[in-house]
Length: 511
Image (cartoon, one colour):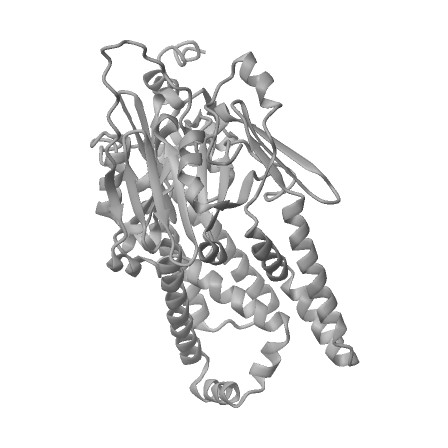
């Protein structure tokens, strides 16, 4: 058997008996060139330390020995990894010192992701990750089912076979052959979208990571002793702290924005989202290319994400709610990265196939919900300022007036945040759908299919009981597992449940 001849999915006793006769296959032999390089990159700090130790002692064999050991480990990874694809299960055996066998029922497969790093692309290989939607334990990589090293030519047929499901036979002689599905382009990355990249925290995270590496390996001390840094310190001393902080903030934002734009292009370059009526296909990446295939039969809705900075810039991103896919904690649910809000709404409409869902007006949650937002945002700031004022009076220390003015500005900022949080709060019930929105710093509008909800919870904290509101939680095996409608008036909570899932709320409405 070869990877090109994947047996059709079946759960019959005969198929289960025949599965034991399926041969075990190895990954592509070209992975013998990839695995050693991956091991060296993974343990690069250890290799760097061994080289430094060898150089200081005059024995350069340390570095060569460690590099040779990593090459051997990489080669053994190929010899100790086998897999087989039967009609009932997909199985993977791996491990040298600790043997591990992973088995996935084909009926439980939820997604198939194709990942191609730089070396994979150079050698004509791909990494295929099979997702079941089950939360993993014992480490993210340990229980991840990944066939790292298949020939790229065999991947499309494999992906189609794993996501095809059970065939529906039709033996009527007059039955015409089914027409091939027509693939429609939903979205394609436009170069102008890169302007939304700086309105995220990825650039700051990248700068912080680079700074951490620099100081971890002692390069920070050398930079601090350089003439350029010394001249900068002298200028800061002369200009004063306010100007220095302002210039430093501008410089940090410029560097972070540039890093975010580069990351955006590398990660989402060549983005293409298509729909053939049965599956959604998302491909993106310049250096590292990734292709995700999502089965529409397991689609349960979409999430429109509008973080505050991105929302101010007029952008949004879109994710699919797939049965179990988000449990993988990867990019499997991504439909559209940071893009114009109008484009995100258009793609969301095409995905859920209902133009009313992404833009339908939402029902407000009333005065109690508004009061709770202001109370929770403003009171902590006022309490902290009061404690600081009392501590200053007791200790007799003098605090400069600009500090008090800056601290006092936190109150209107908190009030503005509370206003935006209440303005974003709401829900709506349409035939077959539940729509909910909440958040300000990270606002999300969720369009959830009613048939995908498997349970309900109405929860009240002590303070919610006093305010007369409750949080309604819709449980689902899709997406993050549950979605909350915050601070609904308690008299409307079970009516909301009944409207979405008839028969689920009337039992509890009068209790």
